[in-house]
Structure formats: structure tokens, C-alpha cells
Length: 348
Image 1 (cartoon, rainbow, N blue to C red):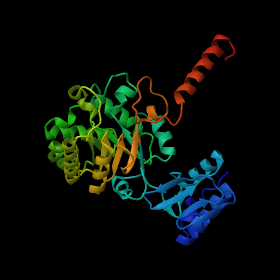
Image 2: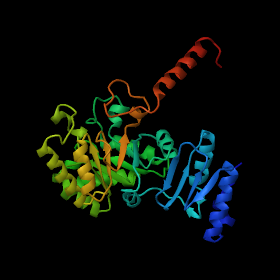
Image 3: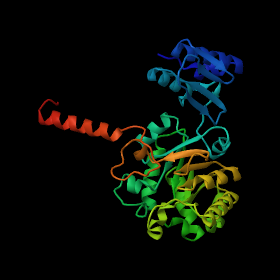
Image 4: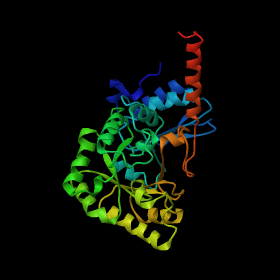
């Protein structure tokens, strides 16, 4: 069994250098030779591919890789287990403050999740941000779009994700219509998502027109992630999903909206289906992270709906999405094998 390293009581009482040395020995006992310290990181010298985890909240990094997934999992769990410390520091959950520090450092990884199971899997994979999106409507609940999703639904699914106790930052979508009520009602809805459901922040589909309300929310202690470009809650007005910013006038409006929302206090921007050139210009012009979906590579991070990236989406999949695993097919095979075993009386 791998030792807990610097997380032991004895290790916690040592000097900083002593803790580093003890933790290095601990990780080496878990993963064997071929590990060397590179500044404040550990690195497998013989690996062919690298997998990097940065403890953004503590400023400590672990870089590792290699042909053995089991070896990687052992090293990862030793390094980031919630009950242990790494190099004498506790690994903390990502915050809006530490997320902003990632701008210009490395790409930010974000995904959607709507329950504790998926949230835990995403968190174990090193995802930075988990968005409990109103995309739960068309991804899981059978709706055609996000419009039918209510605040009650968002509170329910956000609470489920929060119960996973992730290190990733958990953000909840403010659903259809809620951001356009009077300020007191908007505040009450955001309060529920933070106080009742446990989210750390809310995401709001917005233009510059909502900046005054967003500024008041931020002043009240509610972190806001602004969402510009394609806004799925506007689908009935738009009539179709399309790319934004290809027209010069529309591109300038997007730049103005982004700048105004940042000035209002948004800690990050989500750019959906924004022209790549415009997205890059917005990213360069603001001092908060931009996370894109269908907005090209010139942003500070990427987000995908997890059912798209895992091959679980039935029917239409956006052209910008990529399936990194075919989980849907594997699940079908599992259900089929189970059904056949029951019918053949080979199970139980």
C-alpha cells in the first residue's frame, strides 16, 4: 500500500524542505524509479507522454506520464488526495481567484456535469471547472432546448454535483428568464444556487444591458461568469443556432458586451460559437479567463457538454464537439449482455 507521504502527522511537523524530501520518497516508493524533482514538480523521466496536474490553489504542480495507466493513477491519487498534502501544502479546491491566475499560464479545462457520479469522474480526471448547465434539459431530461429548465431543476442538479465534494470549481447556470426579473428576484435566485444548492458561482447569459444587475450581484458576494455569443436561452428569438461575430458590426458588439461585463465584475467569460478572430481579440483585451465552446483555439480554455465528449449524445452533435470516448456504445453492450444473461438464465 502506498504511504500517505507528507500527509502524515509526523510529516506535517517537519520543516518545509524535510516535508518535500519525505514526500518525494513517498511518491518514489509508490511509482518506483524514473522520478525526479523539477523545481516544485515531480516528473517521470522515462515517460513518452505527459499528464500535468497543477494544484492551482496551492501553487504546486505534479507532472507525470508513462505507458501504465495504473502507475499514473497511483501517482495522481498520492499527489492530490484530499486528505493528504503535497510538498507540505494542502491541495485546495479551485476558486474564482485561483482560476483567474490560470490565464496566461495554461489552458483551463471545463465540462458540464449534472450529478455526483459524473462530477466525481470529471474531478478525478483533473477538470478545473464543472458547470451545472441548463443544458441538462436537452442533454439528460429529454427537452428540445434549455428553455423549459427551471430554477428548481437547477437547484436540484447543482446540489447533486456539489455533494461530490470536488476540487473543481462548481458553477451553476441561472436558467431561462431568471436574469431579467427585477434585481431582488435575481438576487434571490442566485442565493438559492449558492446557499441551498452549494454552487460557488453562477453563469449568466448576458449582454451589456445586464451589466448593472451583474455589478450588484458581485457587490452582494455572488461571483458571476458572463456568457456572450450564442445564448441558447434565446433560441426561440434566434430561430436557429449560429455563429456570432462574423459580421463586423456584430463583432464589435460582442467586444463591447465582453468589456462591459468584465467591468461589471465578471470573473470569467464564456464565449459560445463566437468567430475565432473575435474570440481571440476579446481574450487579449480582458484580464479574466475566456472559456470557449465552438469559439476556436484563441481562448484561455475549453468547455464541452460531457454527453458530447463521451459519445453519449443521441442524435445531433454540434460540429465543434469531439467525442473522446464511445461510452454510449459500451453501455449498450453492457445492457445487452445483461439482458441476454437474464433471458438465458445464466444470471444470477
